[in-house]
Image 1 (cartoon, rainbow, N blue to C red):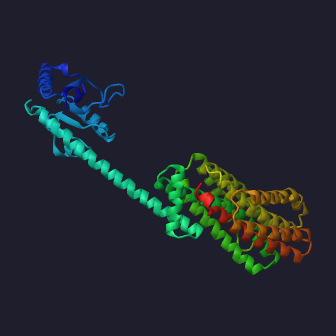
Image 2: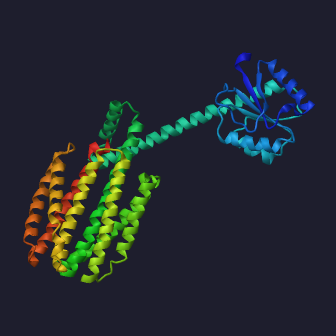
Image 3: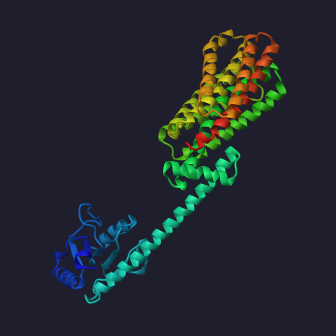
Length: 439
């Protein structure tokens, strides 16, 4: 290496010129290095081992100290090594015990040399430090590349699994989809695979949060059915199932990778939902009375509002326009269950005022079905499910119009359940659609 190319910076806790011995030692050391093509720079006071961004980058760094500046230099040296400097760092100091040197070696110190050593061997010593550090840096880079390749392979395998499960395709076809998307987007297959995994996680998180909207209303609806004697045994079983499903969804959302490190607003929205659920579940006694149902319904509406806010935040955080369709379709579940709940609750509690706001909600459901029909993600499966949903929706409307009798109220309950089942399958179809997963 030419003299102009090998730049050594010496960092000291205090000016070396503070003593005559320091001046003489530094001069002899500098001359010995210069004779071997090594130029010493910045041989002055430094408060910490921090390279100035406006200065030329060194090829090598030496921390130089005596007994008076040892502690300060060691602290600065530890901070420097923790930041993983882009050049070898050696230490020249008084004798040090092993318990001090070992952590420095482990942190990446390129070499240590005693302060009293003669000047003859310095060029070779520092050259050896540099060679060892470069070898270590090469090995670290190779290890990082190997780890990155392994991680990328894991992402590809997981993404293939997502596509195989969602689309019912084989491994080869799943990989062709990933490779084709990568070529189209000019990305690595691993990058596309990671995006696929993230998209599927966002879609499931939105679907799960959306289910909490529906479950808040379904739980009250089933409690009303049980109290009114409308298929009471089945209603009780479905009520217990809905409670467990709500708990499972909250547990999933609390551990979801997309939400663990989510923004504060998202965490607050999730906590509000958890609090609303605790308040609601505390009221779900085995034998609810008509008087208790009103309070249960009030708390269920708080959960509905909280879950709606959470799904909107998740849709925004996901940053994928296709996720809106999952949310729109999932919202229909809650609307249908709320509609049936209010019809049944109005009859049970003799509160016809509960029916006064039905018309706007009927219009919302009809408009959402139109939006889903016109969505660009339509497939043969989704079109078939939408047609079945529309048919069941008309059946529910007819039952609501005739809901003055007990038999018609039973039809309302059953039609709402049938429509819910179809919309659940439709929401899952959108969640697992290729456009959402590959978005």
